[in-house]
Length: 273
Ligand SMILES: [Zn+2]
Ligand SMILES: [Zn+2]
Image 1 (spheres, protein in one colour):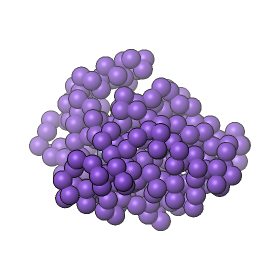
Image 2 (tube, rainbow, N blue to C red; image 1 turned 30 degrees about the horizontal axis):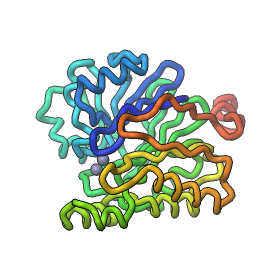
Image 3 (spheres, rainbow, N blue to C red; image 1 turned 60 degrees about the vertical axis):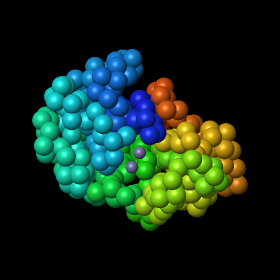
C-alpha cells in the first residue's frame, strides 16, 4: 500500500491511497481542475478513483468534491452529518454512501474505517485504511486526541496526523481572538505540543512512519513542527520511526509497510479463514 498527499492545509487537502490498483481519495479540498491535474501528475487517471472519502464539510476538505464526483462519475462517502452540512444533497453528484463510524467499508483490496473526532463540524471522521496486510491512520482537523482515536490508531503501521499550530505563534499572530479561541479549543486543531504528547503517550509499537500534515502557514513553522515531534520520539526511544512533513503542495509517494512484513496480520487471517 502507498499514499500521496496532493495538497495539505487551509489551501486544500486531498490524500490518494493505492493498493493493488485500487485507489481512493480522502478529502477533495482542491478545486476540481487542480485535483485532476495533481492526480494526473501523480500518474493517476481521475476516473480510476474508486471512492472519495470525506472527513468533514469544511471547504479545505470538500471544495472540489461535488464537481469531481459529477465529472468523473466517482461516488462520495462520509458521515450523514458531512452529507447534510456540505450541502451535497442539493448538488448533482454520482452518489453518496454513508459511512457508519466503526463499521469498515471495503473498497476492493482496501478497507476503510471511520472514527469520530472532536472538531467543530457536523460529523467529522478520522480514517484507518487497511490493505496489503498493513494500515494507515489518517486524521486532520481535530482539537484533541480522544481515547477513540488513540485506540483506533494503535496498531497502524503509518500515522498521518495534523500538527497545525505553535501556540505562541497563534496567540501572537494576526487572527481575530474568536478564531484563535476556535483553533485552540478542544474541538479545534492540534498544536505541535498536542502531537508531541500523542507521540509520547499513545503512538503504537507497530508504527514506523509519521507524517505531519495540515501545518498552518500563518501560525507555525516547519522547523518547529519537526523539532517538537523529533524530541518527543527521541524521548520515547522511537528513533526507528521515520518522520516526514507535508507541504501545502503535498508529498511524493510514501510506501506503507507492516513492521513485521505483515506476517502476523492480514495474510495469516486470510489463510485461516
Ligand atoms: Zn482543514
Ligand atoms: Zn476543519
